[in-house]
Length: 310
Image (cartoon, rainbow, N blue to C red):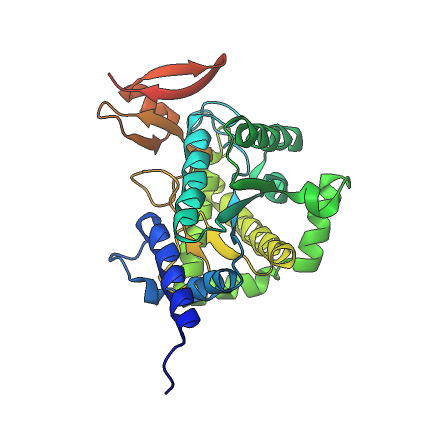
């Protein structure tokens, strides 16, 4: 076998170093950490950018809107949880730039409108969240980040029309998805996680707990269908990007799960929780009701921001 040339060696070395920056933040339910070689999909895509001396582009579906359950969040607009998460992602881009001078950028693929009807959050509230997200990125000078949402894909069509379009053209059939949930452990874990979030996000359900769980199991398939459809659209618009995910991903998966902030649960995100500034100076995420028992509310620009211990 011929020896690797110097450029090949450089590409491999830089790509491995870039991926190593992500590994401490891997969001996964796998019990043990894995080395860079266990992530061939990510190494291959990073190497394509390194070889071309181009900025490494990551796509991250997420940052959709705040949970509609007021026991979990401080309101419907981004708060300290989003500020900390966005700043973390931008620092990651800066750190990559020290290894790979062209740097990196992360495209936040805000997916609230994709799911709005199935998660029961109105479109104007999702617009307000996404617009504030863009404002935070600009105001904090986070030059490594940008936001991409349905408005960038389908323009000024009504949101119901946009959702119908992507569902019709990109979503898998529900029967095929049900079969996958039964056959594949990772898809089944995702389905259960989505179902749990839908149950927890429902504040005023008129029926019984068992009826709520049945309804949320049904809606979870709709969320998974839309998630697949949104992923297909992102791949069309950013075909070469390294794919990140806010959901836990197994080692070796095509998507790399990334943890934005410390939380006791691998599924917790800033839009399903409130941020708590602990007495030791560290931050964590948890439901608003629990954070309120542990700390006092901090305001920023006249709005609730986070909780602080002590």
